[in-house]
Image (cartoon, rainbow, N blue to C red; front, side):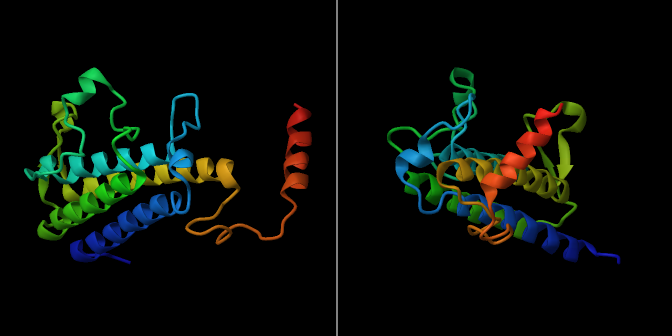
Length: 195
């Protein structure tokens, strides 16, 4: 099946929105502490993933296409010199609601960029090597969707470690219910122990 540019853009946009929705579903219903608490040796937290996603989408769908958003909560490029992880955590002054609201504002801003441009519109990604700096809107939609999918996967695992909630968007929506997970893990551990 051939997809014309308009259809392709709609498909890519739908996939982008799907990953946004999955990431935000993983933070639903948790306390400030649960959202902020580092869950990996490198400090990854659920709220940090959301803040990072907001800054990534802004960068690719804003300045890359000559657009800016007057949003003080976004991390300015020069802040990364002092703290390369600046967009990976919420400060004490930012609440979870603030970070989630920021991400929703950035999504609307990014959607304006996507809506106003053709799929082959060219942008310049300032932080990419000069040899590949110029990329089309379609290419960047794919890039950001893949990045979000990766982080939504991280969020899925982090959420499971917090309260056992698994599933694509809601707990249990794509995993077996009433399953003996302890026995399953024991079986897999026994197999691994043979090696």
